[in-house]
Image (cartoon, rainbow, N blue to C red; front, side):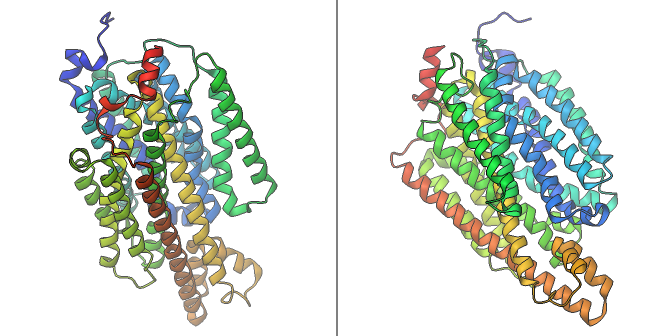
Length: 526
């Protein structure tokens, strides 16, 4: 047991293996992100194998996001208080158990439940990865390490789709989850061997009241976001969930103002860098995860691609991310965060505008160019935005800062999938109204449930009638996806404008030494 009072990043043994620790944390992060994006490739397969409806498909993806987002703040605070390494190891155990249970699921509803268990494990893993990186890297190297971490977060989305596509081409869909288990085992062993223990040395009591209120507020908010497009904004369940989210959120704020050891000191979110960074992260993840959710379905349902080919189709995004994310720290040093982040968001806007022109016959190269722009833009915008949030916090609150980052990611991802997925479904159903006007109600309902189910019906009908129905389905789904991407372009453009306007006074977000706002206040309080 060590008795040194040196900060974790100042210990010679930790300093010597900091890059190996970054590698372990990157693998851990990829594990979490892959389990979200990789499942998107399997959605058409789940329609065929489990009979999942469009709503169930959305919940198979979003059950993970609901639990993840609801528990992130609490999980980050638990890691700060009791040890980030311990939180990470507990997360691996829960995540691995959820993956094993998912592989054994025999219905869509069972898979929704087991995905929620994986979300619980991910909530413990993801904040721990970034907070451990902050604790083991000295301030002068921290922004570079965070840039690599942010790039890996984006790369994991594409890698997950490629890996899942390969597995689906050779094995049953259950292997998407089985393949995660050995990665969990390896990451667990590497963490035990390499990762030092770190925590908030002040050992403040855990804010149980704040944890409970944040859980209720976030769970209610994300539930309302996910279900409102399906049930309607005036549905009693949505109104109730929204009311609970508002009341719990207000009580959380009031509690944090009065609690002797608040889980989320409110002066943190008063810092401009924190606010703008969280907004950018949420907008980027809303757009990108809607892209992963919709584009893989478009390529398989409309273009007729295999899961493997659809997974590899996302390579331009990965290439763009690998180019821009690691270089974002140097770009910020040269051009300033205002120009780099805004430029990245503008590139993303251009990418979504390009994708918004797709139809049922669009050639792949017309998709690849906008996708490369999206990767370049996301890499340039995400890393400096993440650094801006972490730079405003003292190192003792690294877990909480990471949780704030991750919460904005998950809320953004859930919002993007829910809203843009609902837009696509609504346009798809509207466009099919004429084609299904004379069809029996049960057949019309089956076709409207999802594009995958509709294509199965069209194939069963066969002949000219089946061919006409198939054409209506692919055209309707393509138009819905195109409109969703146009909306994503507007969202990202609005984020670019908001960031440019709010950052009038240029600040280097990559230099943790400039954190003199809430971070300084909190350090003085300790």
